[in-house]
Figure 1 (cartoon, rainbow, N blue to C red):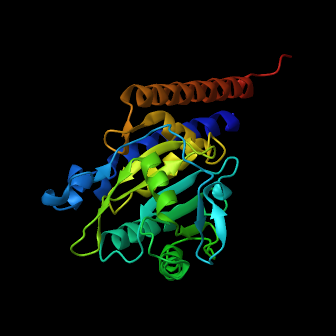
Figure 2: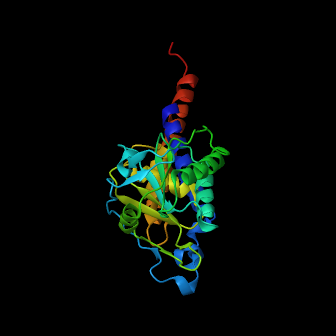
Length: 293
């Protein structure tokens, strides 16, 4: 009986989780005003933006240098069951990239997952003039920011800051649909802002736009991209209730699925209640019966 009631309570908690999730206010990246076209000057938008390449492979054989100066391949960070959060930035960016990295660090800091364990993070500079020294300085800043809220502190070994040559940078940018250009007047880059979730096999799964990111959506995206290798039962039910919409870059409620979960919970609770009442009535009846002479 206790087992039946425990199961019913678990389903109720899952339904409550779905309801709570839908009640959360949208993050900044979900707002259409945060899409790439709003983040650059209208006069300089030519050939700038992000074109989604969902399910397309990322070239894992491309070579870069990590923050220590070691030559690495992009594929070095892809492991079975462990998805990758990928973004293209440049470390000397005067504003947008710093905001993006700060938003990313803040979101990752409240996840119950830890980079290097359940997932990897790879930030690649699209400025070929930058060096591993630039990457190392930025890594120190944003890993510290992530650790401000992270339950299990990390040394940053799961967040990789890369630099590279123009040919490899361009090939990666083209593969993920990241279009940018350099302003000859200022030497700065005109670009959009987004992070991507890539599956352990190197295929692009999701795009999240802007400079602030929803930890809930990132968590669901990582679980989905990991092919159910990480996460809990609650996460699986929430994923059943929510589906990723590439047009908005967010998870939206699937009302029919939520109704099915609620209906199943109702049936379990009613069934458990009837069983309790039946057993109680039987127990009271037996207790009140007089022995035959």
